[in-house]
Every structure is written in C-alpha cells, then in structure tokens.
Amino acid sequence: MPHLKYLSAYSEALQDKVRKMIADDLLGKHLAAKYPQRHTVQTDKALYLYTTELKQAHLRVAPPIHKVGYDGKLDVIRHALGLHTAISRVQGGKLKAKKEIRIAALFKEAPPEFLRMIVVHELAHLKEHDHNKAFYRLCESMQPGYHQLEFDLRMYLTWRELAPSEATPAASVPPPN
Image (cartoon, rainbow, N blue to C red; front, side, top):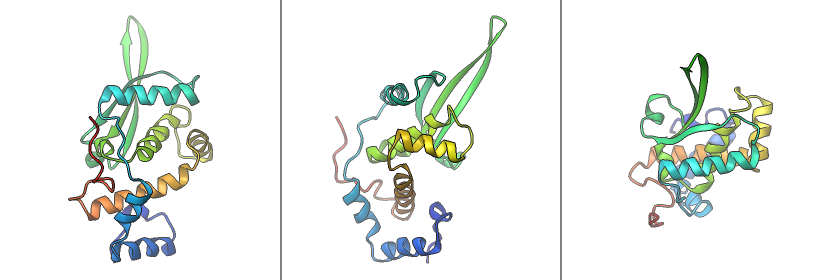
C-alpha cells in the first residue's frame, strides 16, 4: 500500500478509500471527471491580475500585493504550493514592506478550482498568518467548499506523484491559446 503523504492528516478509513481508488486505477478518472478543464491563467501578469481581482472582491482593506508569480522551484525546495512573503526595504529613511505571492508552477497545468484555492489560501495569509480557525473561516468565505477543494487538491497531488507522465487529469484538454 502506498504511503499517502499529502493525505496523512486524514483518517485511515479515508486514506484506505483513496488507496482503493489508486489500486483500481480510478483516482485519475475520478479527478478528470470532477475537474475536466485547465485554467487559462498562464503568465505571471495574468496571475497577478487574477489574484488582485480576488483580493479586491474579498479583502479590500488588506495590504496591497506588489508581486505575484509562478515559481518553478517552490514545490521542490520548500514542499509548499504557494508562498506569501513580505520583503522589507529602507526607502528614504522609512521601512517599506512589499507583499509577494508565489504559486508553484505545477498549477499552470491544474484545474481552475485548484488555482483559485491556492490563491485564496495565500490571500488569507494577508489577514491571518497562522493556520487557525479564523484563517480557515476566511478561506471558506472567499471560496465556498474550500475544505473539499483542499482535500481534492491533495488527491490530485497524490495522483500526480503516482502518474507523473500524465501531468493533469485534464490532460486531454488542449492548452489555452
């Protein structure tokens, strides 16, 4: 039985269901049926616009975001899918902090629901630094069904790790123009 590192925090019964789907070669098919499309947010500029639109809709009073982009090394180096940082610099005797969000490049190929979930997660960190109840309430308010999407994303990452030659369940969907 494979170790399900992305699902290790879930119950053993739930992990067994996922293992059965893997053994029956149904996990990829399940994900492809549930999330059949790839998103069209392919550039850093498009990702910045996408992120700022979500921020404007849900977190108008949060600090501004100065940079958003895909990071090809993020999931390898930090075992993270997204990262929020504040870069502090001295400008004219004042300390300025610029907020940055980086999203793992693997999400260029992901379904739009997963990209949105990761962006919502990183935006929530603008208001709540820790993964506490307030953080998850904020995520849920910005993305209804957040917890189910997080679980499905963890199944997607598990499937992706087991079937690396097929980058996405939506592999049959042609790339955007």
